Length: 244
Length: 244
DNA sequence: CGCTCGGTTGACAACCGTCAAAGCGTGTGG
DNA sequence: CCACACGCTTTGACGGTTGTCAACCGAGCG
Image 1 (cartoon, rainbow over the protein chains, first blue to last red):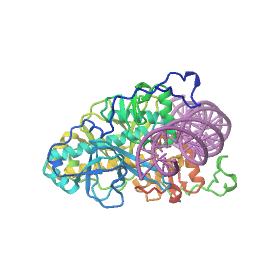
Image 2 (spheres, rainbow over the protein chains, first blue to last red):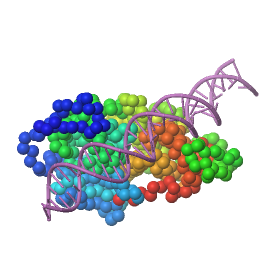
Image 3 (cartoon, each protein chain N blue to C red):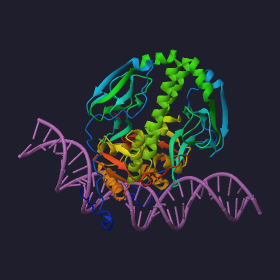
Image 4 (cartoon, chains in turn green, brown, blue, yellow):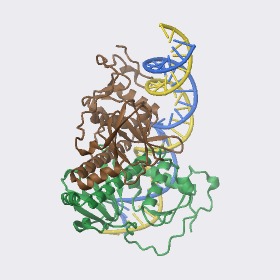
């Protein structure tokens, strides 16, 4: 129940009695639930290969030819690009239920890596899925739907990257992540590091850290542990955008 | 052949003899060519309705139900969101050959507007296209391919937004636009305003203008007219990213 | 026990957004 | 035909935000 101090660049007058949320009882470290999404139960998954990864392993690679489409089953993945200056950009953060790696050739544009241990991925041979889709319109529709979902994720990412200030980006990111996971709408288990968040939002990790501190200071969020937090004031997070 | 002066924040020592490129002879104002892409010639386009727009008109809208998938035939479109503070974010810039408006419901997430006069769009009734795709695997594959292309555009946009400095973003944007249009790899007719560029790149129009001036100053580009330019030094524009 | 990695904070400089003003081109109306 | 107005573009000045460099801390691990 330690009282937290805030760094000097916050207004000292309001610094009192701000506490860390009491840790939830007996949160054993274990794999997260599968985000409550329905898994496909049709013939699609019968031809899937399941692969399991430890943290930081490569799922596919821009360099090597690869003829699979993928579905995230458990854990977290990141689709990223590395620039000439060594900076990394995370283009798509992959959570259970998300499909990724859609191509029409045997070449991917990006590299996908697992972010946490026990990341589980279902691999679908592209050619076989396409043949299946050719003969089964249901499957074709399902693939289309998953591709459209992937497009929605990318558009969401663009909207977040388009925000002008770091706090807005971080706030919108937290809300988005909370809506994509299933710990309840206001509980969030960021399983990813500040570095990964920074690379998602095109910020430095220091700025992410400062923004989180700022949001905590303003009472928008509270931390249960370093990567688990509760959303206290949604209004303070959402720069309420009207998607016109 | 006027000698251009540079604003004071550029190094005055190098300011001499920098000229506007000689204007191309007799460039009448007219519709741009259709970017040299093959148009689909199959049964898909037989059930398309062609619509023509003047500058600034709405093609579809986030508010109103709409059950079409679209294909840009001529001109330019912008898919955008407007935030609470009035700021606009362009999520996808639509050029001839681009499909857009993919959904599985009768609701769109964004609004699409024409950017230039004589923008021409082909509208495909979603339900009829889906039925056609159900019975014709060729069509289904074509739709998938167009959706994947749209995903590639969005990912490209994310990579550009992820760059840290304004000049890098503007430079990458110019190269991208040049690769998407067909005036030759080094000639570019931006048909859009600085404001639109700014809303694509999450910058202010002033910063876009300053970045363009800076790129011109560094000899990376030269202007044929205010919206037409030549790419002189690709290396200076591309912060050569290695997409890993 | 010491190392490494991730996270936080501080100091400072550079960059960019904002406000303001001016130039310019185009279209419109008198 | 001219005058005007409007929208787009450029430039200047300035202040706030953020990236960078640096230091420190704590947790996990060999």
